[in-house]
Amino acid sequence: MKRLSCILQNRVMERPEPHRIAWLGAGTLLLSLWMANAGVASQPPAPGRATLNQQLLTRAAEASVADVEKLIRRGAQVNVQDRFGVTPLMEAVIGNNRAVVRVLLDAGASVGIRNLRGDTALDLARELGRREIEQLLLQAHGSRVNPRLLTRHGNWR
Image (cartoon, rainbow, N blue to C red; front, side):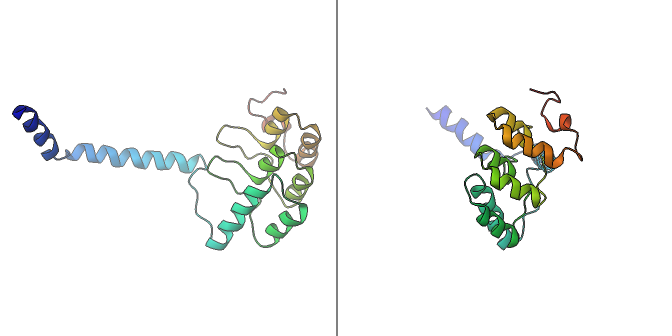
């Protein structure tokens, strides 16, 4: 028993070696750089705009057109992403809210933004069988974007 307490005391008394601290710092820096490049860690918006963006993200699936237009007029960003990379356009696709999809597209929402899984709004529309919304997305950006580039794997499903 005495030997066990000595071992525990020695472990508690040990100080971390300087090279281990340096590796931890380097690992944290690399992780934060990777997250920034992946779009996970972005510049935080202004305090008032953050709540508007959050409201737009949470309400896009089931909100009315008037609510979404009001949030956009007040300064909500239509291409804002949550921590998983989901945009209001993707939320509207998931919620099968065609009217909000139209409003977001008219306000400049990008069809080509990918979430962390690598899906675009068009991918989600196809996966969920939302044919009318898929057509809206293709019509809105068909002349500017190659539809094959909008799919996760570059092929039609």
